[in-house]
Image (cartoon, rainbow, N blue to C red; front, side, top):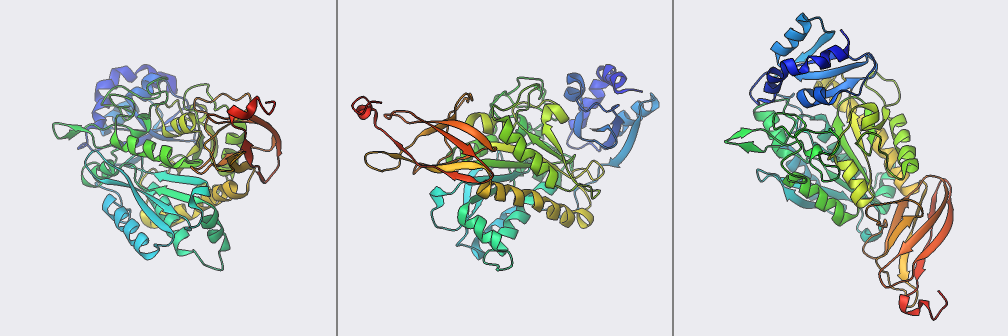
Amino acid sequence: MRLIGFVLCVSFFSAMAASHTNAQEKKVRFSIKTDGVAVLSDDFRETMDIPGFSTEDKSVDVIASQEYFERLRDLGFDVKLIETQRSGPDAGYLNPDEVVQIIRALASQYPDIIHVKKIGESLMGRPIYAVRLTTPENILAKPSVLFNSMHHAREVMTPEVTVDLMIYLASNYNNLEKPWVNEWLENLSIWIVPQVNPDGNAIVWEQDSWWRKNGRSENARPYGVDLNRNYPYEWGACNGSSGSRNSETYRGDSAGSEPETQALMNFIKSENILLDISYHSYSELVIAPYGCQGSYTPEKGVVDEIGQKLAEVLERDNGKPGYTYGTGWEILYPVDGDDISWMYQNNNTIGYVIEVNSSSQGFQPSYEKWRDKTVERQRRGWKYLLHRVMKGPQIRGRITDAITGKPIDGNFKIADVEYQKEKARRSKDGVFYKLLAPGSYDLIFEADGYEPQTISISIGDSPVMWDVAMIPASLGNEWGF
């Protein structure tokens, strides 16, 4: 039976399907053939837990009760059982306490290049840490890059990827056989937040191995908020989340309501992050902003240039090259209140979601078979990104007062591109960075108390250095501006 038939009968089973959010109930993961249609109806997404899909099999994965699966099968739907829920993930995967232990051990072992910052606490009081890897020289002048993981509690492979990144950078610093590590740390501030959602992950280990949301509860019974539907930009705006607590995409009572969301938002603002990767699982995708149907960022050229190359360098679980690239609404379904859309719209941070592993492996693959293989394959992605930020097409420089030579806070924008927040890529001492695609640009620099300046530049395949000396407004008329 075609997917459309399944959608028509969703309401018939809605009460039964809704029960799959019970943290004590055993569930199954199964696939439904979609006739190649990956974008699903609003009712379908509202009612069901859809953890991923397979581009090769043209099927959507669903999590629900065993009874629900059997009823669909008996009604003639083209469903295939993938796995039955286990009591917990493989013991090799990192739990919240183990992640903290690794962070502390690395900070103690490599104090010259590792700085640990507590950026907030979870709802239940667990610390949320950001780890910075960089050399101590000229920290404020370096662009900041962020890698975060575990917005969704059950996606246990994602902290493995970010912890591997931490260990790789720290252990290979001053390794003469890998000189690029020193080059990265000398020129970039690399931030890693390995667990955005420690409470939810604790539920995965202690109560429900397929729990997705955070630990918000009522009467000691968790119902959870989907942290990646809780960010303020387009919160609840395009049927990309749910207002029902029973839904796996419940967006919360208000935009930015969750302490975990607030922690990451405040951190992004304070560090002026240039580029972000948010690791999720699964489906072998690279997802770009924005999440709502029909919307793209106003800088689609550079967003696509980086994102498409990132997708190309990643290897699939079957050994074939290339993840699927696009916005969420193009390749999966509409999403609102997500982190990468908020980051771009409110901080001009270019961000992507990487969905690691395939439908065959799910979000909790065999640790022994897939952990090392997955993190090694993901290294190709973050190595490309660090190289792109350091040596790829961009403009960088410093904004100063033309009279005193002192650095000033100035805004930076591309002419004819509309931003909600017109922010330069700069540090607090006036240094700015902006990732660009090759081409010609008119760039506008503005600062309070200064005459605006427009410059015209051509960007090739490498960074362009350009310092901007701004004329105080009090002198503008006198000097003929």
